[in-house]
Amino acid sequence: MHQKSGPWRITFDTNPDDCNLRCIMCEEHSVYSTCQKDRKASGLPKRRMDINLIRKILEESIGTPLKEIIPSTMGEPLLYRQFEEIINLCKEYGVRLNLTTNGTFPRYGAIEWAKKIVPIGSDVKISWNGATKKTSELIMIGSNFEKRVQNVKDFIQVRDEIARSGGNYCRITFQLTFMEIGLEEVPDVVRLAASLGVDRVKGHHLWVFTREMENQTLRRNKEAMQRWNEVVKKTLEVVEKERLPNGNKVLLENIYFLEETATHELVPNGICPFLGQEAWVSAEGRFGPCCAPDQDRKKLGDFGNLNETSLEEIWKGKAYQDLRRNYLIHSVCKGCNMRKKKEDFLVEKTEEQLATV
Image 1: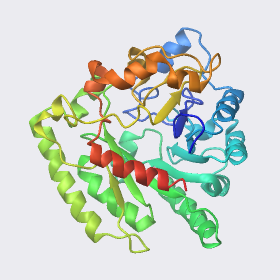
Image 2 (image 1 turned 60 degrees about the vertical axis):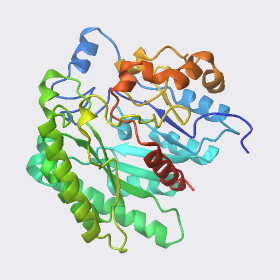
Image 3 (image 1 turned 30 degrees about the vertical axis):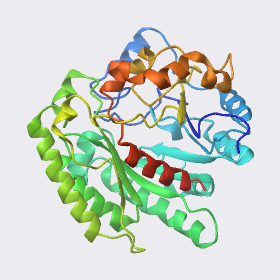
């Protein structure tokens, strides 16, 4: 029994303004986004989290359900200059590292990063949008498809060597954004994952941030959803036939058929998988209740700053508890791409937490 309440996982937005790619669907760094241009025009410095804030929160989380942490998902976390200190904090406080990276493995390369991350890693999610060079590089602008494939091979080789020697087994995931570009290649992404030894293929439907991306969402009309459902059918067939080197099936997450109501609600009567479960901390220390785009998150309320108060105070506070009870009054939550069927959430939650054991 835990002595204190709190999240089982915390995401720290360590360095949202640092990235070496310009993926078209990204809130911060897309070629269509003005976020970085506006920041520079306003004379604002890059947002980079003070490592001492992470230490403070981990110290406060002793005796809570906290099992793992995620460094920035709004930039490339491996560009954070104190990333090795995050690894050391994971070791010190006995929590696992769940990483989302664009697969370029900047600074040290895939092999050296694997040696550092795998021993304390629960899951490494590699952004993977497309099974061909043309599509992948069209979406993830600035990337090199062949180099990223080799990086995956190198990372998995180190992962497997560590596991065979009795060390930690770190799950590897391909993470997709579901949209028109690359839609037909989703089954082939699963084939590629199986051939490389990637354990899981996970994704979410596109958050539309810019006018240029409005015609990319697969939830925009009945015809787009029908095309998505056909791809889901093909993907489910592929996952049965194409197995991992160990004979297991590639795990799929969020690849399911859409109902016609998905244009308004992704999962009618779906629940939020984050409230009461996870927490987000902005680079400035602001508490966030979920992974919604930053401007949408702010619409859900002001819950406090963790530089000034404790996570437990916010977690038990009136503002957060009110949101937990009444989140569906917010349009942000009603139209959220991340709500799940209760039964799916329970299965995925169990799988995620088992990965940290």
